Every structure is written in C-alpha cells, then in structure tokens.
Image 1 (cartoon, rainbow, N blue to C red):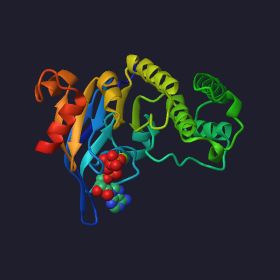
Image 2: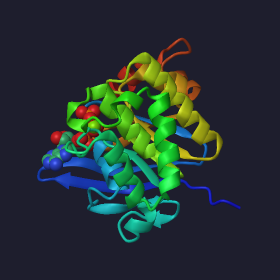
Image 3: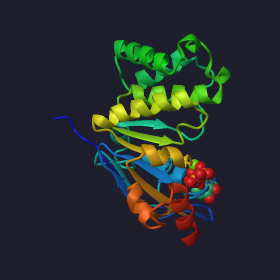
Image 4: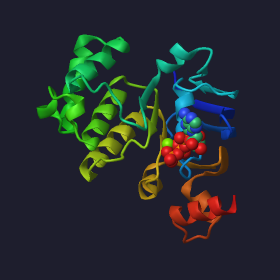
Length: 245
Ligand SMILES: Nc1ncnc2c1ncn2[C@@H]1O[C@H](COP(=O)(O)OP(=O)(O)OP(=O)(O)O)[C@@H](O)[C@H]1O
Ligand SMILES: [Mg+2]
C-alpha cells in the first residue's frame, strides 16, 4: 500500500533577533485535508512554511513530514514535498522549459515523466507558447503558474504553498484548485497560507488562524463560525478572533 503522509508541527519556536516569530506553534494536517493557515501580516505563516521545507531552522520544537523530521532527516522529508514559496524568485535566467527540467532532474524524475508532466501543466495553465521564454520575462501570475506546475509535477505526497494564487487570474485559480483537489482525492496533504478568505472559505477543509506565532483558533468553517455567530463569514470570524487575541 502507498504510504500516506501527514504534516506535523509541534511546539515550534523561532526568533529573529528580538522578534519572536513563532511561540510554540502546534498543528497537523492529515492526508486528504486542505488546511488553510490564516493570520495577519507578520503572524508567522511564512516562517512556519519555510521551517517545513528546511529553509529556516527552528530554535525549538519539531516539524515532521511523513514522519520524518525536517531537521534531522531533511533530504528524505523533502523528497515528499511540493513547495510554492511566497516570493517567486525562481531561476530568472532559465526558460520555463529549462526550469521545469531542472526541477525534474533534482527530483530524479525520468525524462519521459518530465516531458509528460510539462506538456500537461503548460497546457492547462495556458503557458505552452511561453515555454521557451525566460522566467524573468513572465508576469507575476505566469510565474505563479510555473511554480505551481513545478510543485505539482513532482507528484508530492505533501503540498506546502505560501499564497500560491497571488496574481493568478480567475481561470488560473480555477485550474489550480481543480488540480489540488485531484491530488487531495488521492491522499495528498495540503497546507496553504492565504489572505484570500473567500477562497479559503470554499476551498479549505480545515482552517487554522495564527497570531503572533501561536494558534488562536482551529477547526472547520462551521466550528469557527460558532465562535462569531451563525451568520458570520470567515472574515467576521478572523477579525473577531484576531482582535480578541
Ligand atoms: N529573515 C528575517 N529576519 C528578521 N525578521 C524576520 C525574518 N523573517 C521574518 N521575520 C519576522 O518574523 C515575523 C513573522 O514573519 P512571517 O514572514 O513568518 O509572517 P507572515 O505571517 O508570513 O506574514 P505575511 O502575511 O505578511 O506574509 C515578522 O515579524 C517578520 O518581520
Ligand atoms: Mg508570509
């Protein structure tokens, strides 16, 4: 049987100088879940996601992917992950095709698999004509689509995405969500940080709200709504809980 993977974050602490970015953050994401991580600017979302992909080392606490520690078993843990970073800095001097080939070779995909995946994703994201264009010449939304293609292409058991739809047009957002849902139906665990509350409300199966480096609320949309009134939107819930905390 194929291994199913979860994401576990246990009591993470991270300081940058005097700034306490994370102060004991704990949550987990199970296979088949789309977990929306919400929080005000500076709450610690990006720091958390960077710890999960080994780009930042926590001061204390542990993070695991498929049961592997992202610090002591980093390479193995990362082999399960597709990641979309917050800032789309991706090899500006490569063409889209070269960039995706590079990701494919890093992840030891066969040439045929890379070709097949590239052709599929460039088609659905309407980037076929741009495949020999340099990444530096692409629009913000196009770069997000290339990053999504790279993250999806590696057939991840875990998807970690930092505001992945920023800059995507409505059609691209639709295609993106359909693809994520397809992976989720096969058991992928998805962690997505976002400020797009309307999207999170409809797309995520569970939501965690963090503020100043700790989790202040967690649950399904209905659980969270109960805390701000039956008719409350996710925006009402978010504003109320952040204010109270
Ligand atoms: N490299 C760094 N050096 C110093 N401080 C940092 C660094 N990275 C993040 N911080 C600080 O840590 C805190 C958490 O930042 P982080 O980027 O994780 O927040 P975020 O929730 O992703 O915010 P946003 O919604 O704006 O993306 C902030 O106070 C930020 O200024
Ligand atoms: Mg961020």
